[in-house]
Length: 634
Image (cartoon, rainbow, N blue to C red; front, side):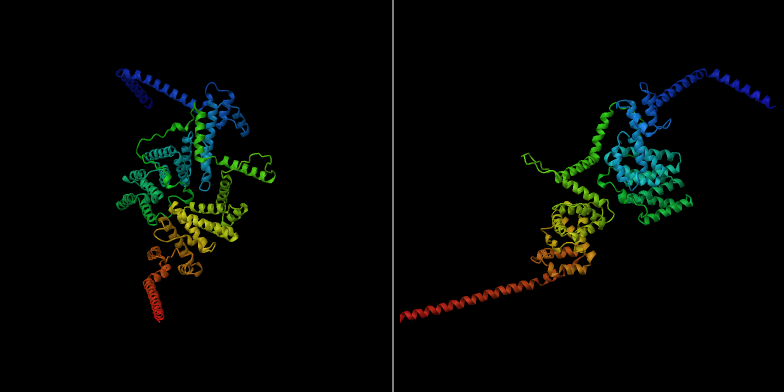
């Protein structure tokens, strides 16, 4: 029975096929041609891709070039590095396809190696090495390596975002390309319901927003997409996303933050999602209540770009059409290879400068100077002696001081390295100025700088005089500094004054009145005295200000020469919370009318005394004249 049924089914199927052929003869003829054309197109594409992917099959290449390319790409038999390098050196024509392919593979390996070893501790060293590579040519390789590394280790997302933010300040097109590719990757994962990839992409976008690469509009579009039609997975992705960038979003736009959390609250009240996800939303509200304490937007080691230098790409939206430029990831032959490499060398010098060359030149100049001082004598035959007025020695000294400060663990090590430099007489002022400048460049005041200045003053009296001059110079030019630098400088000198590292007579440089002060100088005085009050206590600071030994030093700070200046000083110290220092000025101002009255009375008494004296003298002279007249008559 089975055999009979099978034969009947085969007959019916063949009969139907013949009927279809009779009804649609055109369709039958068209399909093979279409298949042939499709096969030809596929064959051409495959052949083109093979040529692109394997340039060793290009005609006109020598066997050595093909072998070097194959070895450089990591395929085939293992070749020792020294032998591979020797094989690559045989190819010297920079215009050849083989040379450019080898250069491309070396660039790819170098970028991948740098991205794979970057972390929070070495990112400042990795960035210059990355700019040494031609990342304009390899921008596709760079973005692909970063995205691949971030997908493999999402815990290092903040590091990769900080790296992209630094590159974005110099080459915004790379930051834009990275942002576009991450957005497209998220959209593909969202369509496929790939939760893990969505979580990784949203985390990357959040940290790019924290670093100032992505715009807040993109963040809000992404949040709207995730919570418009909430599901368990979309709400979970949205919660993780807002945890990573919530602190920065709150600082940027508090209204948007409020709208987002109101939407989360409505989702929670609707109760259509799973209990587990509801607990996740409640945890988000707890994180918000703690001010995102465990989710900082940027840690100190990765805060590498100033806010005014950031370049956010506000034109990139979530649902727009983005060209991800996949062709940048593959090798292309460049007819202007040498010209493009020379242009990137100029760009690299603008970004990094010739620091390495300058260091080598400075070291050579130092060695030459030492040799000249040790053995050679100035020529006595009348030849011209050239004197270097470029201050190269001073610049080199400042560089050494900076490196000594930044490479030390504590203030004792810094002082040891600075004293080991054996400064020439007259260069102590450069050390003091460089120390103050390094202190002002920090984001917040670091006590180590004050301890270094204190130890230097205790070891050598020359530094006391230099810091005295530095105080006068810094106060005279305080209007040139930003508020943050101004605060650090004021706290530095407050530390020295608190520990009596140098004399309190430096206060005589400050004239506290409405005419001689500016807004910057008043901020400097405010921070200086508030820091002194915090370190010493108000009572001790007041006793120091009223000490007879320092009466001349504080005479200009607490003026009594003019009631207007006195009132200005009282109002100033009262407004900064140190009104207790002005008790003497208040008493002086209270007793001022009595003092003026006494002075006027004394003046009037002296005038009356002088008038009486003059009248007595006049009467005596009149009596003498009358006696003389009587004698004459006799």
